[in-house]
Image (cartoon, rainbow, N blue to C red; front, side, top):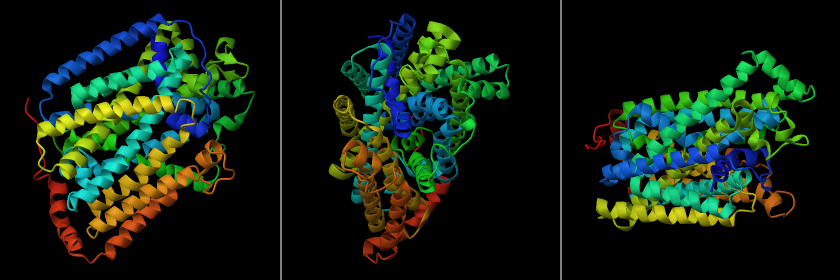
Length: 550
């Protein structure tokens, strides 16, 4: 049960980005010698996080504690936690692997992920904190009819969570199997059991600190690799790029863009999916309810954007460093990296720091996976317990009942993650990431942003527009080249675009607009009249909950 096996967990996030974008094959496990330094660091990390869970469980007394860590997390802490939630193994292994494979073009995904943050910072963070309580559905349903909006938001949120979890669990199993030789099924079960323990016992407080520790470890490890690369290159980017080109037989294409996404429609659609999808991810949005006020919410995004942007700069250096330095035969299988391009950063860490540093990076990768999956699981459990149970099924539910349902939902989601992870073991799961980001951009983001900023939006417009965005996203991904052609083998794709977000986002926004302005019902008048009160609270925070006292 070495950490080698656990590193396969890494792929769980790696696959969302790198497998989908670059078509990297991780299906052929490679036997590895036991890396005892990695195993020992893994044991230390798991022990530390379990202690954090025990500590957090003693302080998790109410629903607010469970969902939002009592609202007492500082802006810096929350910024680190958001970065830890967002800097997945896909970011670390996937983007560095794409830079290794494509050179400059590998930055496309990093930039796409990053540009979603200014939207959250300038348009959403303050209003989210002032209007919401536990989930983003609290904000979307603030002045509208509760039941249909919460059902829509919950379905959209849970769909994103489950799809993302499938990619995470399959990726985890594959990468652990690849690096450590642990059986795929055992790897997936182990991850599932740990996240159920973290979330059900420690709630948001434990999840937050797991994410903070992971962010610090990942930033530290990536910084060390990048500095070591530049040291070996005499701290000269010219030397780095020149060496990289020489190792690619003089191929200058790695220094230019255009070889990865050349079709403008696909490029724009990909950008929209990543940008608006980021602003619609439920496990990211619910982090804004963990801080005491709107000021700390803004600080959270400011710090998170800085940490994430810094990390992507490091990923670019690490990717080119792998081209320049990972050339020894022990890392290569012919002209290809052993284990595929995803392993570029892993092999580079071994070149730089030997077995010990490889073990550290392996442990960091495992921490990355646990942090991301814990956040996803908590977001899914919150949607079920808070949005569906407490606000639709049993509107008189006590906090104890709601928290009990949340813990039950955590177990169910964890079990489903294990089952789906094992069930999708031999499938090309790249499409689920495309679908997750497209749903977040098409169903969650339009309803959320327009509910906060457009006074003429009505319940009917939100519900119809949101559902059309969600359904169109699912249908167009299924009819696209990944699912229709590659997975189902049905021939030429009916929808020629891998990411259909350009179209599905427009469908959602136009539908919300049209069905709102044509709505003359009594309910519509109530929705319009409620905007002024919502606007005042979103700007001032009057009526928003403060932090819990412990």
